[in-house]
Length: 154
Image (cartoon, rainbow, N blue to C red; front, side, top):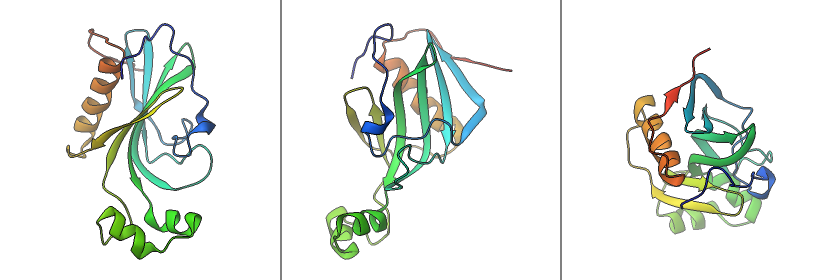
């Protein structure tokens, strides 16, 4: 996904059932400036619409002039919640997802105003440095930002 940071429309977070709540799980020491954009790392945010169909260990919200224009998220679908919501047996979902557990594999997603793009299985490390690099590289690649991200300190 290649987008223009100067004209990218803001996201209506309620159109995506798994969109992270930008007010939940803010990591105050993990706010970054990427070109004209401000990126905030979230830890374990809830879903914005109140339905908890996924577990989101980390997410990054990207704003331009205070408006959310992108989100990058690591997500695992909660098969128990999906089973209940969709009226499908948990065993059937576990077979479909090829797991014996209650969650799907961890995947990366990029949200824009019109697209939820699956980045595939995330197989990187789960330490903060690795997560930060994954998110910031994804944001810079999406908007073709060549300058290094700069941490905002308060």
